[in-house]
Length: 446
Image (cartoon, rainbow, N blue to C red; front, side, top):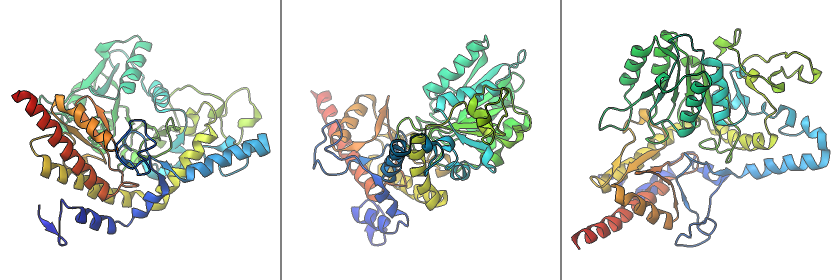
């Protein structure tokens, strides 16, 4: 490959040069990495050595501050009992409040009362869809993508059944024959064709399987111009790509916090509810925590509903999960998304360059090549009888990524991954493919 700064681009020296030029490389030291000796798949190598972790799209690494913040909660519980409801870094009765301003900036909420943390992703999806899905006569269809994450498909189908509808009310967006990703033009043309029958649109910000980032701004604008409700599942988008939910006028959005937001497995979810609906919100389920914070403990017979997203809360968010959430969000707030996106552009682009250089014709990257159409993740497809063996080889070398069908998903996260990580992965992937394909070739000849 071409020489840059005196080093070949596909050299370890060039990766080291990129790391030396990385202005946010210090962030890596704020996270805990699994070691070769701690994971259950018995990899080969020094047990004390760090694994090559490239799975932040599934579960982000643990911030070191998480131990301190969790210990504080446990200490408060033990030492002051019920007073922990109103004391400490994350008071239990107001556990959702410390993170709100940071989250508002991350998702592009203009007002703090447009967002809140509560429940898990699918619970929140149900609550918001139940409010916004208002079928009337033949206007009863929901539009999703054909390869939506299973929980989204289950939630949508169950909502339709709840209202007495079946598959005839489900519109599935499918890529063109021979393609993996949806084209924005095809999404818009489907919306246009079905506008008189659509009651709700629910799409992912970033598609979990292919890593494709949807043009949320364009799609939302198109839907709103046709007076259609649209919500976004941002599980793979929040903390990964730039979001401007208020400016785009999305009706609602939901997300989890354990992927790019690094808040721990089963971490508390989040909700965006646009300001345009606050004065006249759609009917929705409520609970004690839907009350305004100032009057909640007056124990009124009738609810004094919060204004905005907090009116969807049912119960108090667990302070333990809120504390873990804060430990990571403070890092986001310190560094800012602009710096993370700048590094992401280089980091994922570098991985793509190395793979295409050394493995052209051996595998296919199904994630869009335009950086504007993706986040961290690259989804790599190998021939079906090689994928499992390549993945096994990588796992034995201490690489933590994942395999979904014929796809290996890799996500170099700018907050804690390095350019050397990317170089190491590309090198190991090349060795894995060479070994596996040579073995397949030998068996074929025999």
